[in-house]
Length: 273
Image 1 (tube, rainbow, N blue to C red):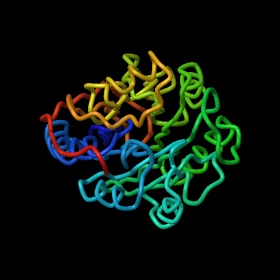
Image 2: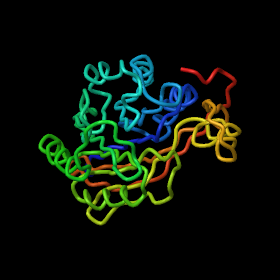
Image 3: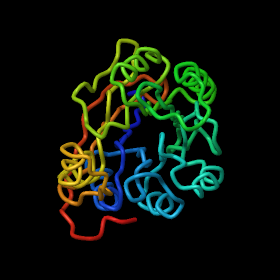
Image 4: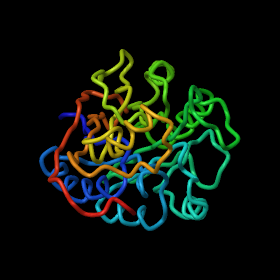
């Protein structure tokens, strides 16, 4: 008799309304075509491209997202603290001192899936009191493993070296470690020697006709002059990007990992909210 496995889709940083629409339109297709059991999305840029409010969180959960992770933009809106405290399906970095949960266990059919959200230190703004990311992540993974062998870790960080180091740090303990924050999907999806699925960055869910989700010309003006204008969320080339990890539900070991991309139609709807 074959071992039970879970097919888990992890999507990179969702940007603004285009990203939310990509999930609304693309997730049902992905669930059907990829036979998904569980979906995680990093949502720290879901509201106007920076931050997440309750309104947008409720919207995304209504589309079938199982868990939402975040990062350094988690408290860009003051009211988000209250939402974090009330909604266990929205995580904040486990090493940040703020309301809400940094790690939790969620139902997945007959199984349980643990998720840890952690933020790196290198080149990252640290507006909250923080613990060492590696100590906090290891402690959280070990705690969740008391309840389930399937544990996912969103390592939200800027430096590729720090994210790769976290993968090796948790190899054999976490079922999958995936990086978020840079909005650019990396090509190094793999299964590490002790059975942990890994990718340095899942990429971005949202408009790719621009610069990491923002309108191209505004970003170019910032790089070529002293202009400090507001950079609106882009609209075109809207797609979901991430990775699919196949996890043995009994052992928690990753038995397969692959890149995920799904294009959705372009839109002319407003980028705000």
